Length: 252
Image 1 (tube, one colour):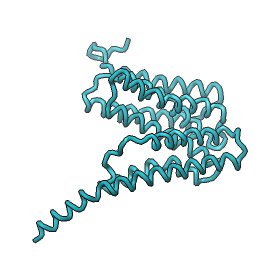
Image 2 (tube, helix red, strand yellow):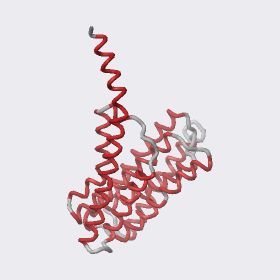
Image 3 (cartoon, one colour):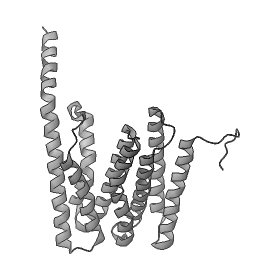
Image 4 (cartoon, one colour):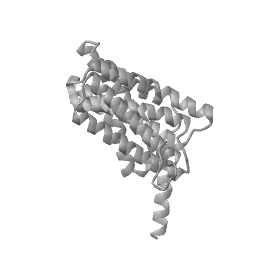
């Protein structure tokens, strides 16, 4: 049992952070003992784990949460697996063992269908949990796209970079920060990105077919983000027009 210097047990969030970090280190040790993992892989994954926990703890404390919810724990398992994928790609680049990468990526992607259901069934859905889930997805897709780009060309990076480009635009354009309505098409396209990247990363497909699969996934992603951007712009036009009228009126 962990005891602090003043004789008290650390709170639940701190204990969970320590447990999660230990799980990440254990996974890295397992990778090191099986496929081999150098200092770069260890450093990249450990730094990512520390950063994830630092940001997550801050967000949870600001929301008033005292512990990770059931769904958050599922997402944390996904984040740990993603850390393993990051370690492999950072350490070996194009020489990453495809079997190890796929073995970690498949459950990380599959569990994406679990955490949301757990949150709804347990009544523990939260804005922090949803954001944690989304950022875990984005990081996994980015890391996979980095690996696939070493096999099929730098253009594959666009698959992983698209989400971050959209977020960057939202920082510059306030009208892009509005919440989007739920969309089955958006969720389907997002899920297809991971499937396409894992297929390409597995090296099971002939290179031309793998390139075509990733290219199709990217095209669908461009369509999805384009559709959302158009919806946000059209939805913001009445508000922008009203603001313009107010500014015009105040200048008279």
